[in-house]
Image 1 (cartoon, rainbow, N blue to C red):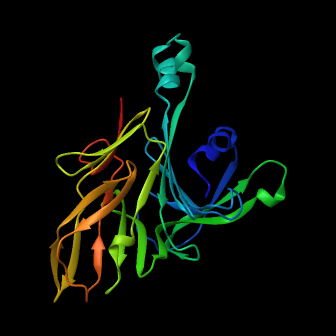
Image 2 (cartoon, helix red, strand yellow):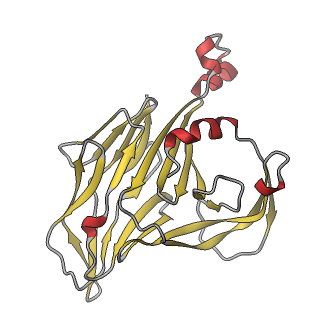
Length: 263
C-alpha cells in the first residue's frame, strides 16, 4: 500500500510540464477528469483528478484525498499581507483504504477527454508519459467479490457507487480512514471527518434497487468500527437483484453531500 504519509515528500516536490492537444472524442461534459497513470506517478497510483482545493488519487489499495489551502499566498497577493505564515501553502492528506479488497481486480474507464496530456518528470525518460487521456468514468471491477466500484461525475458533482451483483455480500465493503484528526457519524447519519484544514462531510448514504422499472429505496446507514473503519448497514432488500450503494462526493461549498469546509 502507498499510504498517505509516503506522499508528503512526493507531492511537495512534484513538478511536471503538461501539454494538451485537441482531439475529436465523444464524451460527456464535466469538470472532473481522471488522468490515467502511464508511469508519470508511482506504480500504486491508477488515476488522478483535480478537485476544488485539492486532488484525488485513485490507487490500487484505496483513495488518497489531497486537500490544499492556498489562502495564505492569496492574502499576500490580494491584501499585501506581511504575515510570515501566509507564505505557506497548507495541505492535508487523507487516505481511504479498501480493507480486504481483492488484490487482482481490474479497472475500466470510458468517456475520454477531448485532449490528451504529456508528462515530463525530470531527466529520467522512464518517468515520462505521453498521450495520456483523462476519463469521466472509472470502474474498479470486482474490487470485492461480486462488487464493482464506480467513480463518475453526475450533475456537476463527483460521486462513487458500489454496485453489488445478485447474491453478493455487501458487508465485504470496509473503508479504513487514515490521516484524520477525528471521525464520527452524526445523529443525522452523516459521516464527519475532521482534518487540520477543515471538515469532510458525507451525508447519510442512499441505496436502491431497480425492480420492474421502478426504483426501490433500501435503508442504508454508515457504521463506524475500530474508530476509523466505515461500512454500510442495510435494511431488507431483494438479493436476486443488483443493489447500488450510492453516496455522492460533492466537492462544492454549497448544497453538498460531501463537502470540504475550510476553517
